[in-house]
Structure formats: C-alpha cells, structure tokens
Image 1 (cartoon, rainbow, N blue to C red):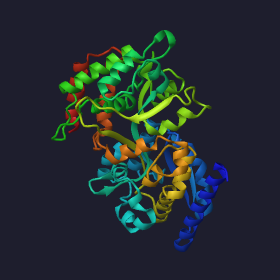
Image 2: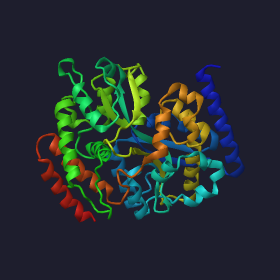
Image 3: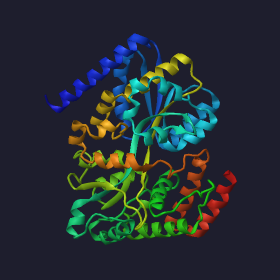
Image 4: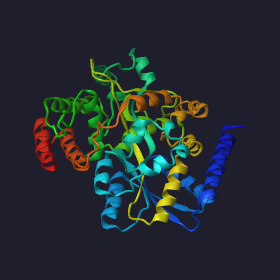
Length: 424
C-alpha cells in the first residue's frame, strides 16, 4: 500500500469511529458552523478536510481564512458586539488571559473532563493543554496546533565555513555575522522586523533566550530593564550586519520565504514552517536544512518557546451549535484525523503519539526536536495576560523604530515602559 492510500485508509478509519460515536449520541444535520482561521499553513488543510466532518455528522463547517491582525479584530468585534458571526475561532496562545477574563468563549473544562477517555487527554502534551487555551483554571480553547520555536539552519553553509551548529546564543550571533556575504546575497540571520506583532514576537523569543524578560517577578512590565535595552542594541546590530536588505519590514511570510529561497543561513522560527523547507515546489534549500533546539545564552538553563493555536467556541451561540462545535473540535484533534491533518503538511502537532508515529517520522524526521520543546518548553515567554495585545503593540513599535533608525533603544523602551505601566 503506498503512502497516499495508507493515509486515506487511516482517515476513513477515523471518520468511521467518529461517525459511529456521533450517531450513538446525536447528529447535527442542518447545522452550519462558521470558523475563523488564522492564515497559517494549516488553514487550507483545515478547509479541505471540513467537508469530511459534514459527511460524518451532517454539520457543515465554513472556514474563513484571515490574517493575524484581521482575525483578532474580527472575532473581538464579534464577541464584544454579540453578533454571533463566528461559531469557532482559532485562538492564539497569548489571547487566553483576555478571552478568559472577558468570557468571550465557552469554558471547556467540564466538557474535557466528561469526554477525557474519548479525547485521550493523556496523549496530549500538558504544556499544550495549558498553553493553547488554559488560563487560571479555565479552558477558553482546546489545543489544536502546537508550535515549537526552533532554529532552522543551513547545514551546507555551516559545513563549508567549517562551523558547527551554534551551542549558545553567543555562538549563534557570531556565526550569523561570519556567514553573511552580501556579494553572494547570503545572509547569516533573518527575523521579523515589521512593526507590530511580527517584530514583537521574534524579539521576545530572542530576548528570552538571552535572559531578558518583559515582566518582573511582581507581574508588572520591565520593558526598559538594562538587559532588555542591551538585547535591542544587539538585535539592531544583527539586522544591520547580518540580515537581508528590507528585513526590518518582514513579517512571518516574508521571513520564511527569504529562508526557503536560500537567502539566510539561520532563522529562529515556529516549527510549522519546517515541512516546507524540503518541498521542492516552494523551496530552493531542499536537503540543506537542519532543525535544532534553540540555543540559550552561555550559562543559562535552556528553555524553549512554545506557541500555537487553540480552537475556541463563541459563548454567545446557542447550545446546539455549541455542541456541534465541540464535536468538530473533538473530531479534528482526534488521533487518526489529526495525524492525517499533519501528513498533509499542516505542521501543527498536539499529541505525544504523533512524535513517535512511523509515518509522520518518515516525512518529518525533526519531530524529536519538537517533542523535547513540548516536554520542557515555556508557554509564557510571551505572557498570556489580558494586557498582552496592547503590550505587544508597544514592544512592536519600539523595536521596529530602533531597527529602521528612528529611535534610540533606551529612549524607545523608556517610552514603551511608560505606556505599559498605564495598562497595569
């Protein structure tokens, strides 16, 4: 049996198991669900698989694919206005605090306990259950797409330069500069520089690995700490000395594309993109990329950033739609269906069993790196607090201002700190 036939067989088995359970309880014929999805690479696969849920249960799921800023704006307006435009939405890890305190989505805690055996909760990484929707005893979303922050590096360029993959952040920074050769249009480093969430997220991960923090032990902002200011100074140097021209305006898509096109030797990134580096239809670096755990500052205990998405159910919709939405969430995250989801290239992991699955490992040999991240990672390097969206915007404006040469690092972070204090 070839891989495609085997995948379809697994998929059918998952559908039949789910359909049987649904028929024993309740079908959802005539119900239509609207799902707002982040436009990460899982989105088109999610939309392609949704008709199979209708075949199994009778419920139709329409997937609307939105950019990150558009998604947050649209679903927040829907929740605040009680307009019931979306029944389900992909929910970023850092929205948990805001959504929990506002009561925007259904608290799934009791449903998860009730259906624990069906869901196979023990097979889901606790870090993802906690991070992708858990907040102070509430479960505002169910984990759906776990990402590990990893380092993608060009094995061929490292070997040609006689270098080993970086063991520390100090090595990483030095290697990035050494591997930069503008004459060959090769750069040692690439990251998001675009104003707003893009640069804020990439800089926070970088800052975290160097030992910086945007919150103090009292939970209050410390944006202008000496460590954070130095981190921004060094980040600016990396952009100036080792990043492709124009990187100060890169978002996630542009950053990934520059790496796939062979422009960069190193890129800290979310693991969802890793499958694409060996796809000859979109990548010029097939077979040349290594995926490794992100290094930390010398002497610092390594910690690995975790991100990703949960699926949240709009608290305003009627009970029948809520039940249908919960049925969809259980279906798409079930072992057989979620495996098929990832075999198609979704890059969005959830279960321990996926990390050791022979079919997935054959296609994606970097899964052990993700497993270590999910087992030992930190879901709070971007703090999951109600003030996070505003805090992210302040950081994104300050760091981008430095990168494009419009602001002094300390002055920019002093101003961001002053504004951040007002949020608390």
